[in-house]
Each structure stands twice: as structure tokens, then as C-alpha cells.
Length: 212
Image: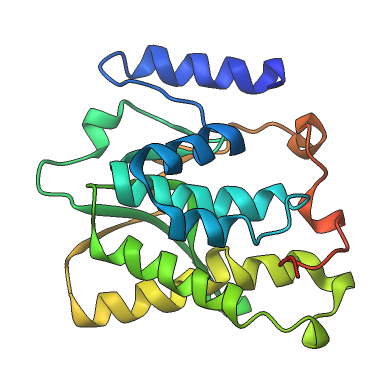
């Protein structure tokens, strides 16, 4: 069940973008979708992920959904600041929101917002990269007290940045990069939004990422 605070955000996105079909995804809907398209390989990889770490599951789900269907993925806590038709240009193939802090040597592509045409090679490379992380997961080299960092490096923005950077070098100007400073998307300013999730916050789950 989705908290009212997130439902109100979804309603705002729907009213702002009346020409768009909005679909909510969860684990069961995703698995049924994989069955419908006959993608047993992806289903097998997905089922190897720890089901108690929902943020990691949704990382994987969003990459697969965007690759197969295209469109715009938004976290429950995200929304555009203006209609998507004013953000997405006709020649855009892939759009990422990018942020960096040079003083802290920090940079990432924000995966709370993903925009792409379907079947783009980059997303297939991202999926393959996470699948490789699943195959090579070594529980003996994982410190569970650092699980938030583990997940970010396993399926989140800290790992896919490697794939995106390499793709960017090989395909210059293919990806449309938007900086957070342009303020085209927002986390809508909900303080302590984590408490409104039904699932346990992923940084608090001290379990291995992959099932054995």
C-alpha cells in the first residue's frame, strides 16, 4: 500500500502530464511482465536478489522496464517541475540528470529519474553490468554494516556511472545530460520521506545482497 503523501505526488504528475499514461510497478507486476515477454534469464537474475532489500530490487526493475518499454521512470518521491513535453525534445534518445560536487570529488547520474527510448543499447549494458555483479558477488568480501554503500556500488548510481561514462566516451553527444542545477526535476521537499515507505530503509538491512 502506498502512503497518501506519495499518492498526492503521483496525482500532481498525472495532472501535469495529461497526455501520459502512468503505470505503478511493484515486484509482482514486474515478475508477471517478465513472464508475459518470456524473459526467463532476467527473471532468474532478479530472483537471486535479496527480496528484503527493496531499493536494490527497484534499481534492477527500473533498468529492465526502461530498456524494454522506454518512457520516463520516476521514483515515488520524484516529479518534474514542468510538463515532460517541455523537457523531452524530439531528438532526445536518453536523458540523465547529472550532479557533481568537485570539492568532495562526488558525481553521479540520478536514477530517481530515467528517460529513454525503448531498446537503447546503454540500458542493456547497464543490465548486463548488474547481472555480472550478481554472478561475481563474494559474500566473504562484503561488510554488512556498510550495506547502503554496498547497494549503491552493486546496483545503484555508483556502479552504473562506470557504464554510462564508457558509453559517453564511445558515443559522444548521444546522451542528453541535464544538471540538477537546471531544477527540471525535484524530490518535492518531503522531510524524512523514508518513514513513509512500507519497506525497511535499505541502509538498515544488514543482509547479503544476493541469495545463495
